[in-house]
Length: 411
Image 1 (tube, rainbow, N blue to C red):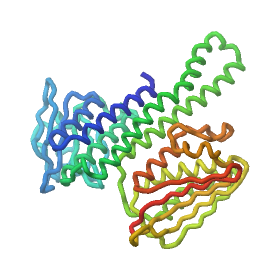
Image 2 (tube, rainbow, N blue to C red):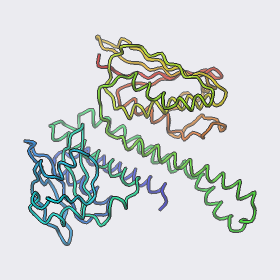
Image 3 (tube, rainbow, N blue to C red):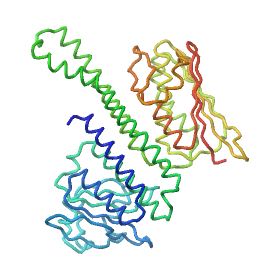
Image 4 (tube, helix red, strand yellow):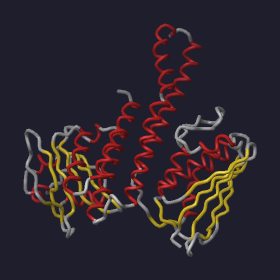
């Protein structure tokens, strides 16, 4: 199975997993479903899931999946256990954890229990809620980065649902479920569109492979077709990167932020690229803006998509990218923060304006540095929506485009 097919299959599996955990009302059933998903994804024969107890004094074994040759495991682990301390500190997937004093803490044969395992933490809102230990014949080094990202997506989704039940919230009536449902619908759309979008690139690659043996001595053919195939491979890579990047950030981690600082850091990343093209970046950032609750990495992804889109709209013909921020009255004394992104590019035809936020729809010119994937604006739109914000656009052909982002503030 090729990479594209594997990605599409994973998105469909993720959809089923998210649907399941959104409906499960009890911790034991939820833990069993999460553990089953991790075992299936890693092809592991045995696993254990530990969860923080109500007094937050230790972790207890909530569910387990045994194999034909089961390994004994402790019913509880203290917060001082070296494995728990390691997970609480680094919050990353561990491979074959084996501290020197593990036997004394675990109380069973530690090398059998831990050393043959992957340990996957469940972290939500900066807090370790628990972890899964999977008996695996593979090392982390055997997993490619794509598989590691998928494990993190599954664990992050599971952590969010576990935290919801632990805190006594009803996931069926919460905004969290609404947000997750929107993201799920988006992933389903992406999965279908992805299969369609890669059909042409795969056809050109297949054709090249078929013709090469009989035309291997045709230097012009090899040179020209190689460039076409290389471009198609890069397009598939960009599609995969954007889809995985969107799926990876499925649960936002909201923090109080200064939107001006976020905007400035994004523009700094684009400064060299803009100067190379003769494009001037201007900032008009209003002082003392009210602060905003947001996931910094997600909002940066949305802004960078929009800024890059503006640069591509101007191409190499020079121009100006103007970014402005300001606060506006909302209602009942509430305030909103607005970000205006203005370019002097070729503009967007009126007939296209209603579709620019659709997945895989692009208006980028073929002469731009990279042909558009049609996902940048879609992903930016989804991220802004999930932050309870709005994004609007107005454009004049031949004159430029303005995107306006509005986010609720704390003030």
